[in-house]
Image 1 (cartoon, rainbow, N blue to C red):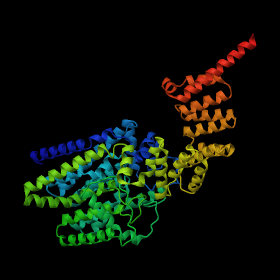
Image 2 (tube, helix red, strand yellow; image 1 turned 90 degrees about the vertical axis):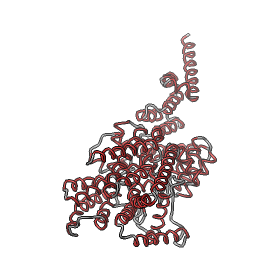
Image 3 (cartoon, helix red, strand yellow; image 1 turned 180 degrees about the vertical axis):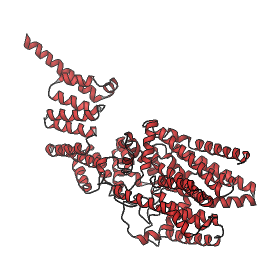
Length: 611
């Protein structure tokens, strides 16, 4: 390769990397958000060493091994869990480190996209397209949301596998073909979107293939990919209990009819990105909805335009590849997601759509070079600034995101999370309102019932809490949610004076979640309420074995000793707490004063009896 070309490529790489770092700089100070907490921060699986086989038998999103087989997320992405484990080894449980990894992966993906598009069209046009992709605000969710990195990684594998398949086919380089197969394995075990590589190969053969070796040879080239796909589906079925989705296929014709509605909505987000957020979209109320009808007509118009420009093979490849990559999100095969739209899902497909945009850019530059480049610079500047703003605000931390979603976008998908913010701030009226909205909108989600019951108990309405928990009894719950359900109903019964009944539920709570200190604290406190201080102390010590740093357990333990009039032990326990915990906790100070006074009284009584 000519030295000037190499230098030009290196310069392009540097510019793309620099622009990404500037646009995504605010993400480095961000926190774990949304599913990051369950899948990364609180996921014990990634904090421990496992065999390779263990990763391939782990369902994504099932962090409690006891839930395996009873509860399904529908997600199977073993390679993603491996990357979390590597991050944990590198950074510890530090959100900045995980976010740095996401940005590095995004840079690598952009450089590979540049390589891929340069293989198909003019290198300078490929550079413009890659910069647009690199800074496109739609991609911010995949990059800044740690749990969405599966979209970046599957895109890396898809681009690499497709590029090497094309090179192998055109130049008969069998070593590249083998690597393409290996990368395909990486793609499907990163995300089910990887299965779309086979139809991408087929579309390439119909549109761009320069070498024709006959359909039989083409079919043979698919065999390893098909065989691996079948193995993947069987393995996935064994782990998640479903081939592709945890949902049943219902109303298939309705889903097909509304597919153009979803496609057009996604195109609007890509081509006119504004007001981006964690979009929650449901189907229109009926097939005669005006928006759905217009979407269907526009889709037919696009199909007609594609027919008219069918001689532009690269443009046809671009649009068909986009539709293939977006197919898993059209809900024709139902997804486990509650929304029909997720901007993170578009990461895989945007690059292919931009190839078609690149053809239009190339024509515009030929016709009016200065005007076209000026418009490109303005668009790229808008994308870069918008991406920077989204990273500084929306995707930065949970509280900011949730407040913007609920208060700014009326997105009640986060109503329960908004309620928890109010609850933690003791704004009970607002918290109750949003919990009720969450239950109304998503009546099948047990955690909203559980959290609202805690609020009702705390505000002196234990009877209402028990009635609410009875409604949630038949809902699907994880072991931890079952523990919370038992804990909350037990606490409510205790408040109503039904101590024996409440105690039984609190005992069940620690069986479901033996690693949760607050449940042991509540159980110990309940034993203390009925005067069974020996069992109270035993329960609290078991909790301390699990969580020795839990101040509430130490407080309850000291209280049990005070009730037993063992003031010396109570004083010893409370004084052993770190000074910061003693001086900053009103309850600790109150109990310490009470224990010291009791001890002093005992010593005085002992002195009088000796005389």
